Image 1 (cartoon, rainbow over the protein chains, first blue to last red):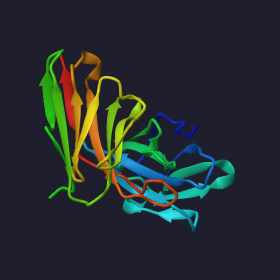
Image 2 (image 1 turned 180 degrees about the vertical axis):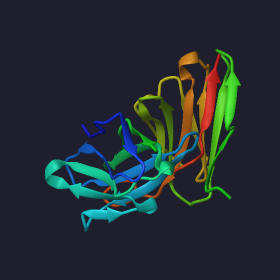
Image 3 (image 1 turned 90 degrees about the horizontal axis):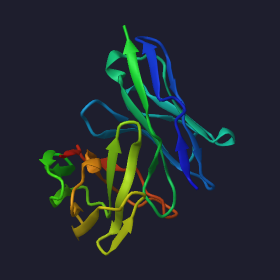
Image 4 (image 1 turned 30 degrees about the vertical axis):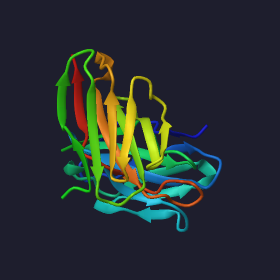
Length: 112
Length: 116
């Protein structure tokens, strides 16, 4: 069955430090992959997506993610975190014939 | 104006009451979805619809029903609300991608429902 795992429930990063959020998926075919961000009290906003082609994709707000087929991973990165990046982050995969499947999310806290 | 709107934004109701949550979109997408979000559980799919005549159950459809009134409207009903249906509910829309997959989903702002 298709699934998405985000191993880290909560991460704290110092402002200005680099960030990597992990995402592993289980899906037999070439996946569509997504990262969404949810700020407190808000809906979900798409950060970036991977459909095919270049395995390093750029998104909004300075985020990027790299698709690694051999590791079934799609990790999200940012070189320098800002306090406004504190939010919950969701990885998702789009299997055929149904809706997106989401991971359980990683909460990012930013310390000053 | 928002592309995906949900009404109401907040609702408090009592056990046993019938509740309808409404979703409208102006993105022209065929596919629409309802999710619920509980802390620590991520988003759980309740129902989804790939076009007006297509309705499908998600992983947690028990206790819920839906109606796709038009391409732009998708309503979620709780026929007899119970306290463990207290949650944040999201509507989303998408285009179809290739090979039967959905392209990125666009989310509404959510409805916070409390069942007492």
